[in-house]
Image 1 (cartoon, one colour):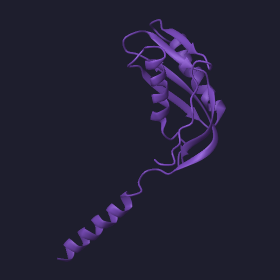
Image 2 (spheres, one colour):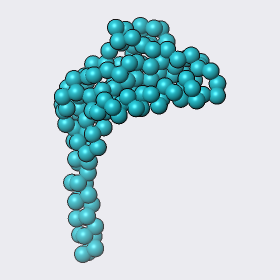
Image 3 (cartoon, helix red, strand yellow):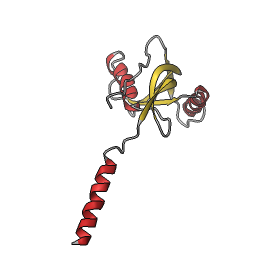
Image 4 (cartoon, one colour):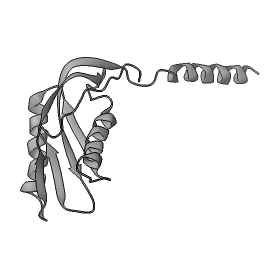
Length: 140
């Protein structure tokens, strides 16, 4: 009987501890990000320029962009609606430090321009065509 009480207590404590497992998000004044778009059906890849986005949410512990999927959906929707290119794989790279984002941008671009074994058609997306907008993470 005592073992059952201990197990029940342990389960109750675990349940209470898992209610707030999700990392807390904090709002930062700005972050820098760029987008990368590719498809498995062709060799054309797209890069946005590095953009400064105001009022961005990051995870409290690791300072990673919160809601990354929302930003990649913005890019995916742009390609589906404006360019009529659906089903693209969209990735957003972000950081609060511009130098770190620039380093990743150069590394990723070199991967497709210089170090690639097969030729890729690398295209840039102008800031006038696409701009990331901040996602409100208050409710999430």
